[in-house]
Amino acid sequence: MTTSIIPTLENLYDVTQQHQDNRGYCTLYWRRGKLLVKPLGRVKQPYLPSLDSKRSLVECLQHSPVSLVSIDPKLGEALLSFWADACKEAQKPIFLSIPASNKLPNHPWRQLQRLIDWIAAFMLLLLVSPVMLGLIVLMQVYSPGSLFCREWRVGERGKLFQAMMFCTTTKHNITPLGRWMRKYGFDNLPQLFNVLRGDMSLTGSCCWTLEDAVQLNKLPEITASWEVETQPHLLHLDSQTL
Image (tube, rainbow, N blue to C red; front, side):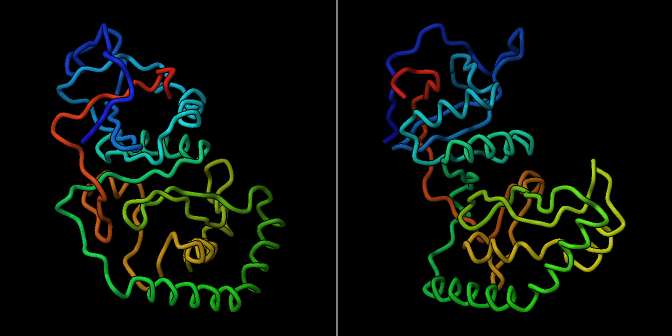
């Protein structure tokens, strides 16, 4: 069952009502060491200032017993990215919440598939390493700046991870070299490192962007490991017991 780590909360307000200063954008639940971030519902929760500042949220997560965070894609791409960045700094894994109806059985060949992915990615890295080195030299000459950029993606079981890519823009404007790299897919070569880490698969389904997750709200190859009971208790993120 879902348990609460806080005493009875007072001065609660109905989050479904139009609050005068429009504070609060989600409801937090606590379940067996897991923090669930859900859209506002017909429950009561105190205003949590920590949710408005990434630094405060990171500090709360760092000093909390939360083992992982599950977030609902209905909150939108901006909030998904906000929480993902905070969880990364706090070193807490974050997953996208998926309905139980989308669960997939554990495939007996999953470990073999991961081994094949690792070997294939390693061999491909050896083959394309001269190309990657050449691209790095060209990027330093024609578009000096950051070599790599990272974008949040949804991987296996809904886990959020940052996919590595070559930077193809400068101050939000695509460079001529970057346009050529995108045309032939060379900007995605660093994602082979994500495959080595187990974030992505070469032989399975493709991962999703946060935008795709929000729009579709139904992701293949992703399962939910637990569901929220009908009457869960709320989590007070500002509590001193965290």
